[in-house]
Length: 496
Image 1 (cartoon, rainbow, N blue to C red):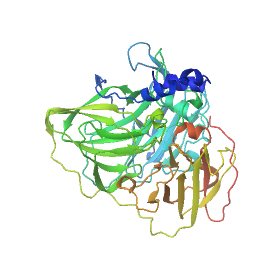
Image 2 (image 1 turned 135 degrees about the horizontal axis):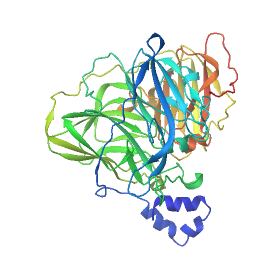
Image 3 (image 1 turned 45 degrees about the vertical axis):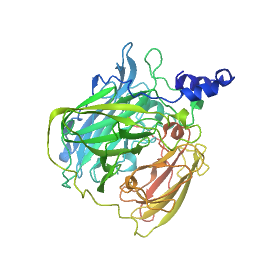
Image 4 (image 1 turned 90 degrees about the horizontal axis):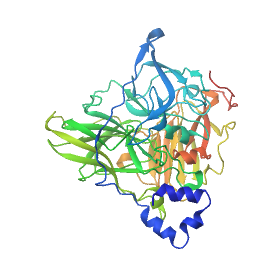
């Protein structure tokens, strides 16, 4: 009995029929998904195209992105109705350099309004692509800004209040890679030894259409039975170099991944959401919650085969099995050639460590996530919750306070995790972050500097990035204020 079938029945109010008479125990026992040995790995891992650009005024790089509906064949049988960017599912990888001025012509060819949010990017609020920058059906949006942040793996996706989960599930997702002039010797040939991996789970109905359980189906949201990487089920990647850099994105709506390899080999975490760590961290397991990214470097031996896998998690609680925490899932198989090129090692020094711990703190704020609310309030599009002053550092204390999994994402800034329950953060939290997994009951102190791009009327978002929670209201809004400015009022407008 598949997880989604029973959860859908519960959401429709027939839980007593499904779960009565000991049925819940049967379902609970069967809810654990284990695909080890079941995946054929018969599809080559597709590498998203690099987005093309044209030269605009004053050297601006102009990218054209078309949002469109179509059909994608993921498995045998009927094709699946999907959405994509410049294609039928997912979108191209946008790659830019720090200091470049970029402009996008985002044309919405869908039959309803949507948006594209540049997740992790430092930019003006009016260019952020959040719920206040909707692009109507048939309309075109032209955001423009200068890239001003270190090299990092960012991404883009819709951000429509109340419908982000639905629009992302249909396929509107892509990577956004920033490069800079910092010289670090890491694998860097895109698609060869520098490999993008957008990891998503999906549920399919009997006609191969995406099936989203009704909102009451589970505590976290959509938990799918099939794993896609770059839009492909059961992918393999042909390894030709001794070291391979994987740019991992948890692009799922709700599923937590606990990444590791089938032989428990160790790998080096070299970057998190906002860019390079100060030094690599060697490990054999890595958690990524929805929206988080990681860059890892893995060493291979000639002729070997090994699978990237997601292992069971410790964070699920008593009923975590229903939300996939007990699942063991094969993600992608790596097939090393009989001869591998390259003799480089992972550098011992990578980037600059976050440096906000000793800065004067202008304000300390507290955020409790519970019952699809933050601090007891649900998101309101016309309410700005507070303003922060440009040029200052604030500390936000965040806690998950209701027993379900949550994480916390802040727009515009990368933050430093100062402490977790008063203790120094573990190595994967010591770099720049924009999204952090919130373990139940633990208090996270996050330091962030607000710079540039003041606007008293156009807000940035902070929210849980489990998309059902976000869509149901676990989100708030803030503005960045210049000298003498006060919090204004949210303008009502669309782009056309």
